[in-house]
Amino acid sequence: MDTKKPENIDEYIGGFPNDVQEILEKIRMTIQKAAPDAKEKISYAMPAFDQNGIVVYFAAFKNHIGLYALPTGHAAFAAELSKYKSGKGSVQFPLKDPMPFDLISKIVKFRVKENLEKGKKK
Image 1 (spheres, one colour):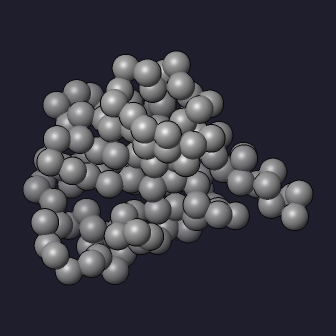
Image 2 (spheres, rainbow, N blue to C red):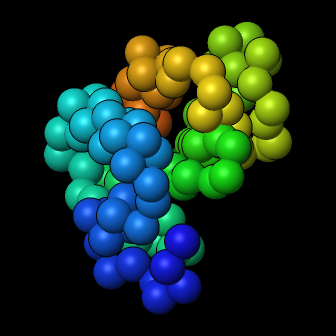
C-alpha cells in the first residue's frame, strides 16, 4: 500500500491489488446505491460517505474489509453480523469469503435514515 495519504476514494482503491480493488469498487457502488445523496470523502485515511454526518467508512486490510457503521449501525444488525469478527463500531468481512453486499446495503440505509432523523431534531 502506498504510504502517501489518498486524496479521494479512487486513489485509495487504486493502491490495492486488482482483486481487492474489484471488491472495494463493489462495496463503493453498494453504498452509493443505498445512500445516493451521501458525499464521498476520505476521513481518517479511509473512504467515507457523509450525509448529515458520517454514514459509513470502509477500508481494506491484508485479510479482510473493515466496515465502520458506528456503534448504532452495528447494534441494529448484531444478529446478522454475529458470524463476523467485530468491535463496537466495526466489523471485518474476510476477503476469502463472499462479501455480504445485501447486508452492507441494509446497514447503510439504516445509517442514512438515522442521520436524517438526527438532522431533523437539530
